[in-house]
Image (spheres, rainbow, N blue to C red):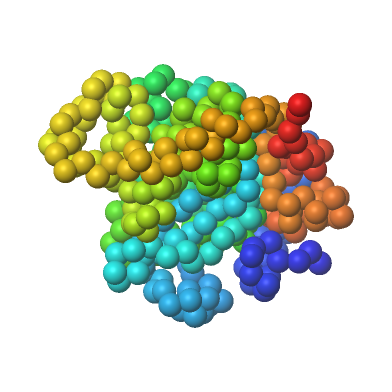
Length: 341
């Protein structure tokens, strides 16, 4: 039996429930996925309730089940964080999940079929939750968002879902996405109208920004870092506006920008954290320009080690009950971020 797929030491009890649904599932085989991760109705009918085990974990860490949630995703580290809001209004980290599979490379998604997992700021409401996903359970990020649409980016149905199989989505294991789905559903049923998802290429520290200096996406990433820094400072959901072809964070506009590509309106008492975004500028500029060769997305090292040890077929059976095989296992075993001279 494989060890637990979450950062917790206990294997999620939902695996026992999953096996009941696995009886009639088709054998995993080679299957070409569509350009998006859209999921229609399937025979699976997973529970969307918070399990007693998860309820105990939430309580033991000082949270309530109905507390609002916020999600942060980091590609290079292959990690997804769930934050829950305290009575003070500040968010605190509840749990970090290793991501089982994501596709593409570091950088934003720009066009349909590029197999890129998106980067940016997204709001997920109740209508974007899919309890009948082919990929066990899923929620739609809402790509393209307002900025991406204005820039002409194309694509649809970019998800966080189960099945550990990705063609542009962030794929978790079935037990992981069952926990995620149950938590966000409970929060929204308790009054949270939507939850924010912040998707980053990596943890946006000065060292990481310097390490990726020379990447053609650096201008976009500096913009993302403004939102990252704002959340790091306040631990509150960042207010996101769009103008001048970029995200604007926590700015007190006299009116909401109407044109994502046009000039920003006046913002008296501007709280935009531009200074925070440039704190590592000198470090970035002084670093050695390093190119990175991308193989095909990423997989958390803990999953990569188990995939190597157990093989794709046995590993797939442990992480999912769906019909989809692990995405391109040979590529998943490679290091996707090996520097080149």
